[in-house]
Length: 109
Image (spheres, helix red, strand yellow):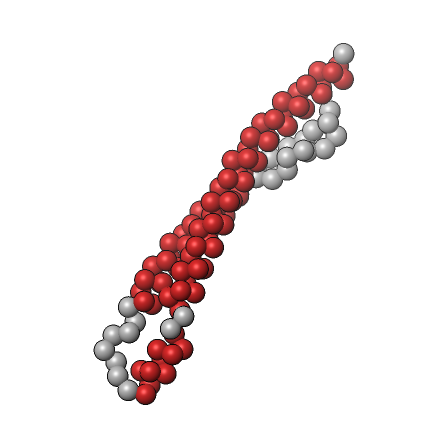
């Protein structure tokens, strides 16, 4: 991405890269889907294993499906928020470009 300059305004009022933020949103969404699948798989781990070791394993993994589900939900929320921020940033950058053009025109007068 080329460096954006705003000589008439004197600063970039909307710095950042919407495409970079969207890439992070996609990564968070992929993580959310993977965690969701892991939560479903972890919920099926009970199987037919019996004995003391089986009980100990179940005791230690009982909360795993819920924890993975919460992690999936958090990553899903992150993905949506990042995507929304990327949209807002893109709109603000368009507005910033317009303000720069207007400021340059006023300086030229």
